[in-house]
Image (cartoon, rainbow, N blue to C red; front, top):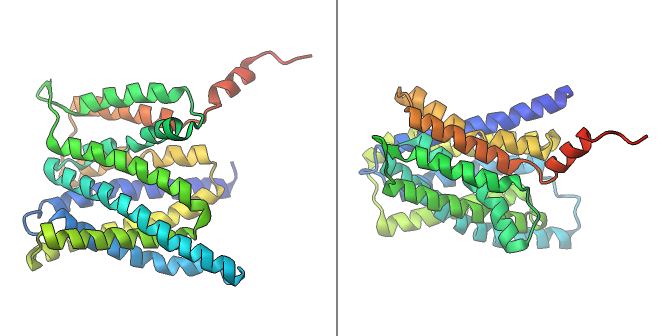
Amino acid sequence: MNKKRILSAGLCLIAAIVWGSAFSAQEIASYNADKIDAFFFGGLRWLLGSVVLIPLWFIFEREHELPREIKQKKHKCTLIFGVITGAVLFIASALQQFGIEATQQSGKAGFITGLYLVFVPIASFVIFKQRISPLVWGAVVFSFTGLYFLCMNGGSFSLQWGDVLIFVCAIFFTAHIIVIDRFIGRVSTLRYCTVQFFTVGVLNIIAGIFFGHITWEGFVAVIGPILYCGFMSTGVAYTCQIIGQKFTPPAIASLLFATEGLFSVVFESIIEKTVPSSTMLIGCALMLVGIVLSQLPADILKRKRVAESPSEK
């Protein structure tokens, strides 16, 4: 592996680390839910994230050489599809934040959210008849067994309301990925992400006006998490993802991004000064195995059999 690939893989890992740590920032914000609710926190976070991405347009998406008609069509698709995708992401992210507020366990939230990586290939198979690896079915078994251990409390299974919200959020993140896959070839990538993040922010603010609450004290209390989630989780991590994926094989990039849940547990333990229980560690390990299995290419077993078969003379 050359230096460029090593550096690119490192950038993908940095993105996963930042995304994993963002769960702890969300948990810190949830401590002030009585002063600023999930809608207003999400609105401020995503609006900041959309602004952070704008300078990246001029670095990674120089479209001045495109014909005017093509550019106009692309920008129109970017706007329309960005709003649609943003609406789906709004539901997913709001459910996630409300779930974290209910459980105040960012590590568990990170792993449950990571189930979307297992759900995506299954949804693609059911909806679009796309080929998937047989290992995905094993991934389902590992993931749900891990989820069972994650929800153990005092030796018995206990599914909290927050866990349900985060599980449903994983389903909407699955829909989000599928929608992106349908639209991504017809849009300007960074502008598309900016529009969807802006849409998420606006929808959160609107929902907050009708159903939420915010105080100046609450805003001041969560300014740190807002800046971290908006700047680091969006601007820095997304930039690392864009550059890293250019020179990293898709299978390896997916596996590196899959460590997001693992880092959510690590940062929760460091920031909250807590030690995960043995059942939680077992659950995390099983879910990590499931997520990794779901990201392996469909032909990996076939390639292994070919590699192990005797060569023809």
